[in-house]
Amino acid sequence: MTFQRLLGPYGKMPILVRDDDTNFFTKPSMLESIYSRAWENGLKISFGVIPLQRGTNNISVPPDMRTRSEPFPITDNIVLVEYIKDKLQNGRAEVLQHGLSHYVDKDGHWEFGKKLDTAKYINRGRNILVEAFETVPKFFVPPGEQITRYNFEKLVESGLIPICRRTSFDTFLANPIIPKYIKHVATKYVTDKYKDTYKNEKTVIQSLKPVIITIKNNFVSWTVPIHSSGISSPESLFDFTNKLIHTCSESRSPICIINHYHYFYYDWNTSISRTELFRCWSQLVKVIKSLEFGWFTTFAELYERSKQIQNIQIAQTGSKITIESKAHVKNFSMRSTHSLEPNDSSSFDKNTKITTVEDLKPGSKIILYEKN
Image (tube, rainbow, N blue to C red; front, side, top):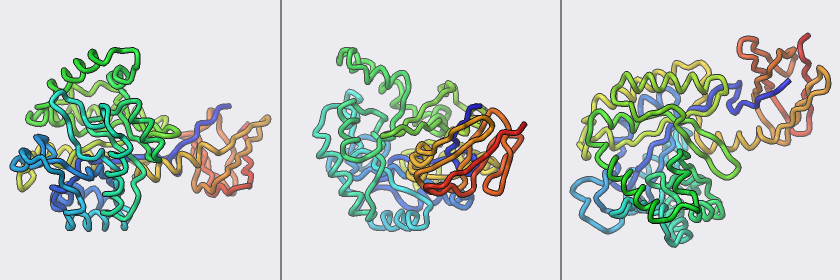
């Protein structure tokens, strides 16, 4: 018999929401308008915060500030900082370090996708976030999803956990055998191809999509197993989402919705101007909320639980199954290929073949038996 450890309590599927590009220019009202309903429904938001946003020609900066080159630390936006701190204290959000200044050069290379004084960039950004939110960030999201192998290793050495995209294109860029000039040409081509995507009312829907999360020992990766470039309408987005949920429902793999708050405010309009995109987001919240097997969580909660579950030992001798853990784990679930006998310390769902141990304490053993 084989056993599959499930990350979520009661075998539920972890669901996360990651919103990138919160920075000095972000208004609390922008975040509140988009996420108030999500919070009401129990979702948690992982904010990818830019510590020191530069005034450059980037959609994460208001149009009238894009010719300014100086950096703007998020600590100077006291109202925003207090707003996010309130969400942190209430367990509704977490802060992820999103690069340093969110800078991209004319060739399409983002700051961590090229050679730089990595330790200086990491520490400067981390120190700003610690000053702002009085908590040390645990995770790092590279701007533009670009990060060199060297910068990746430096991040891990610094104690940060990278959250990185893992597609065939990323594998191509990470291959040390491929000459740099070929990578340069490929990067510029992709950048030029998608740089105006946010201006198109149809293709901007692609910015709002769920992806599959994989937890590794020292980093978190995300992938899109189903081709998503065809998303150009609410219907195609919902079809994509339903397929992804179906794909993950068996393994209960974590799903994360990646979002960007400023996309809803085209060129930083004072109110939500992309009403169709907002309708799609609202509908996604309803779809997720309706899932009976969804667990709304953060990267920190998911990563910590994943480490605990990896250390759980499951051994079988004949029809006897012994479960031991080095950590205290509440409501640990596993799926087995055969049915198990429930007892006072566990329950078994015959429809999903998921067994849940309610209280797995360090040093203790839980004994289960296979049904005849």
